[in-house]
Length: 205
Image 1 (cartoon, one colour):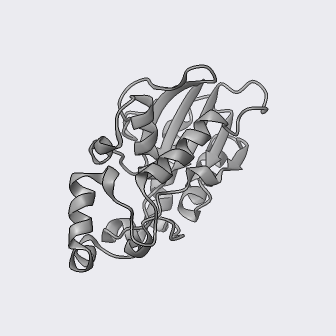
Image 2 (spheres, helix red, strand yellow):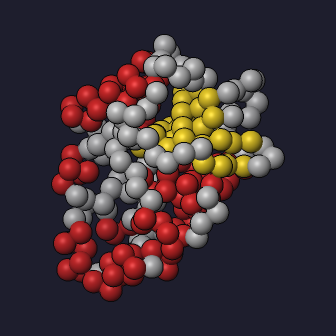
C-alpha cells in the first residue's frame, strides 16, 4: 500500500519560529492557500483515505485535501499528533535558550536524550508512531491502496527514521517542509519502507 505523509500547511507560529507542539494553532489565510496548492498536486493520485492528526492545523489541511480529491473519506487519529514540547510551546528559540540553555543544546546535539520540560521525549512520540503503523486505521476499511496521512514535522521525521531503520539521534537531520509529502510503502507483514526522498509540492505527481 502507498502511504503519503503530508505535513500540515503553515501557521502564524511557523512563520514566527515558535515551538507549536500540542498547542492548537490553526492555519491562516496563507496556510489555506498553501494547502490548496498541495491538494492540487495530489489530484493525480487515486487516494482512498485521508487520515489526520487531531490538531486544527492538520485537520484544516486535511479538509482542503479531501475536498479537492472529490470528498475522500477522512479519519482523525490521535497517534499522529505532534511531539509535545511542553513549556517550550509558544516560545521562540531565543526565548527557550534564555530559560533552558543546556536543554536546548542537548536538543540540537543529541535529540534522543531530552525530555521536554512539561512535555515528552522522542522515545514517547516514537512509540505512538510505531503503534499507528502496527495497527493503522485503514485496517478494516476494505481494499485501500493509497492513504494520505496529514501530520506534523516531528511525527513525519519519526516515521522516516522507522522506515529507514535509523536511530533517533538522526531526528534533526530529516528535512520536512510545509506542504511536502514523504512517500512510503506499507504492508502488514513488512511495516513501513521508504520509496524515495521527500517530495516538494512542485515535484509531487
